[in-house]
Length: 174
Image (cartoon, rainbow, N blue to C red; front, side, top):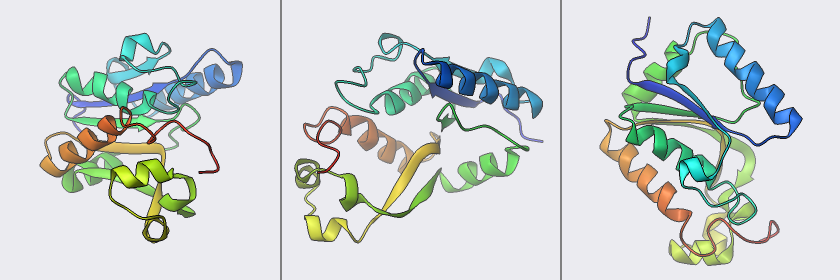
C-alpha cells in the first residue's frame, strides 16, 4: 500500500453541471479506493490558483493548479481532468511516477504539429515540419514527481509556456 502523505491529486472545473457531476464522481471514486481526501483538491476559481481565465489563455489552469499544490509541499502531484475517475487502486500509477519522475499518455494519432501554433513552435526553435514528428500528450491525466530534477525542469517549462505569447492562446486550427 502506498504512503499518500506527500501525494496529491488536483482538478479544476467551473460551475457547468456536467463538470460538477464529473467532479462529484471523481471524488467518490477516490474515496472508494481509500485515497486520503485531505490530499485531493478541487479548484473552481481562477484567482485561487493565480491563473488567467480559460477564455484568456485556454488550459493555463492546469499547470497553475498543479503549481499551487506543489507550493503546499506535495512531492507527487497528479492532475486529473474532472471526468477522469478511478476504477481501482492507483498504487502502480504512483509507483511509476515515483520511479520515472512523471507520467504522460500519448494522444494517439496526434502530433504536437496538429494543435501547436507557429508562434509557439518558433519560441521553442522548432519548425512546422519537425513538429509533426513528435507525439502529442493527452493532458487529461498526468503526474509529476517533484523530487525528480527532470520532472521539475519539465514542469517549469510547462508553467512558463502559459506566459509565452502564442503558446496557449490562439486559433485551434493553427
